[in-house]
Length: 475
Image: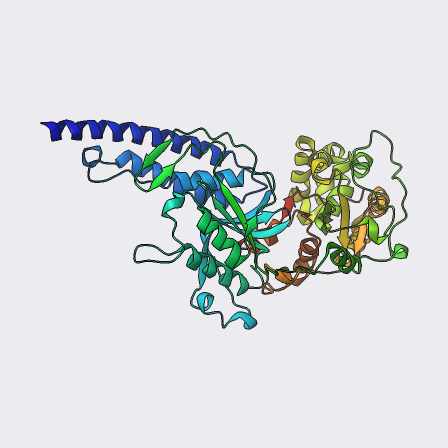
């Protein structure tokens, strides 16, 4: 009788735990749905939702009557920690979540034994953190059960970190600046010191904002699901992939090297304010950007808030569609428009209708405000050629005004972008344009989402900002 009573009591306790976990699951799914789309790719959200729904399905099928022999063990805490990280404002360009990262070895790293035996490496998040590409490893385990050395039951922390670091050093294109370790329930002093001594780990110099997670505390078996609300016990460490104990590369050298890729003053536009009227959305947009008032080295650093424009962005800003001609265009006879735009008729009409509903200058305002706009020489050349061939008088005038507000830099693509294989989807000219933005740690403003998707499919995190396309209309 006593055993039966204990089993019934245990069943009731587990039933309460299961219902609490299902509630957490539902709330987690809501939070995944609310993740910012420009920050995280839709396929990453899909992966997270699939994992969360899988947890919910498991809980819905959990055999309460077998609770005494089958303890409740779920991955909710791990998923909650991942979503918590993705909510942070300094996390951008999320290209992969909870999926293996394919590896392509550079020749000089093929001899790394730990990585050479792998075709992929499993990291929890691939993203940019404060403009730098990073890999994030997340653990929600009870710190007392995280062992340093491997044993028969589990891979040790040392082995896991070494494997990830070897993989990071084995690839040029996907190579992260650093590995971020997020222990949501903290880390023992012993393991913390070992990570510091053997891998050069240091505390991440960023404060994670408070999340609105609000889940009940649970302790079950070796897993500890503390209230994730503020992750008060969390330990967040950073391991630089190319860690050097005595770092001799100063920010001054970094700025000087970057400054070599800025064209001299005579190659920049004149520094005049665009004079197109105070109520004009075009001039209002340009006035929000930092002016190119000089090209003295002390005015620039890689910490500056740059934004890189590709050709699609420049065209969209100066297009007649974006500058008050959309309604006029739609009021013209269809025959006239089809003759004028030929095969591009549907494309142009769709853009004009989009502009009336979502004015592009207003949509770009937040992206460019307080930023210093840059373009590489390839974009400058292509933009000038397109405006000359297809632009009307007003579009040409706006193009001149826009170029006077931008800093022209040399084509200087980052090693990781230019290292991607050149294919039809990963065209060389696009690798140069986006790679130059990556070199300057600047997001690229673009409507070329085919290239962005192609890069994401390689597993690389690339900071881009999408805008709606606009065409030159001869305005």
